[in-house]
Length: 333
Ligand code: ATP
Ligand code: MG
Image 1 (spheres, helix red, strand yellow):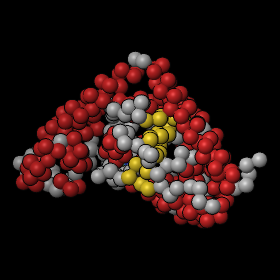
Image 2: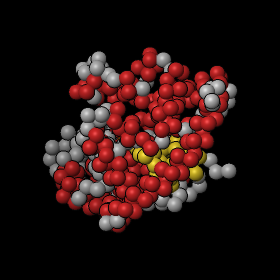
Image 3: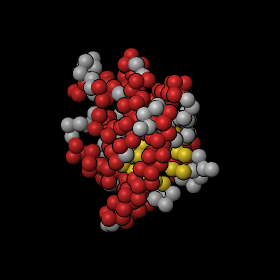
Image 4: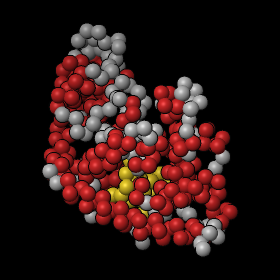
């Protein structure tokens, strides 16, 4: 029996390099070996975009096309839309009895995200919604609805997986062993930094390089990336460890990384030349992805079909699982 993988992305924007190197690279490897469910998490996206339904709607197809364009094979991966699986919402209600409000408030990822969303949730999180605070519970439902055993993610998701395992243990201890404790699968780069030097490149943080960015956008973004502030003149020696340009050379220009590093340290490499080299390498890296995306853009019915088929498979699996859960909870009337 193949193990089951479940992972998800929020349709809040296009894929960026953080997704690609932090999580999606693993999807590409894993699609050949596992039973793979890939959730387009529209319900979760609405927790902090409830006032912007058009954005979520538009990005369902956008992010699906992005994922297909990096080489995920719809014959191997079941792409599905979260809101089309009502069992996830049911499980969320059942699990919400198994987690305290205080535990959710302590979850480091949730805490961090509340602090970043002051406009929505207030300066000190005083306007936090029930839905956003509870999204880790719904994420536990996402995973367990498919009996997910492995979850490829970036490291911002680790506290959410820990929370999921706690819910699973609590469920199993009360109702009998039905659910599996999922394990994370991390990539070798667990968190990709943003153009501004922020620890995380994120859609909501405005510091991302997107896989669909055109050449001019890439040029502007790389030219504006944060570099060593102590390097003033072209031939000043600098510290690559605090330079975002060097950081991205490490992603798309591995073959020349040693020379980029030593020339930067010696002061024989000016920032402008270094940025230009990165722009070229970045464009080379993105070119085949954009070409593949074009095929899907020109054939939108195919994308609808892929989502429809994947969602049908996901519905069947979630039905099996909810029956087991309801039986264990003695609500299988
Ligand atoms: P949002 O800001 O709307 O939450 P996001 O950029 O965080 O968007 P998600 O859809 O929440 O993207 O995350 C999808 C997957 O990509 C998750 O597994 C997450 O861990 C991973 N991921 C997102 N950003 C990064 C990053 N900068 N580095 C590594 N992994 C990342
Ligand atoms: Mg996120």
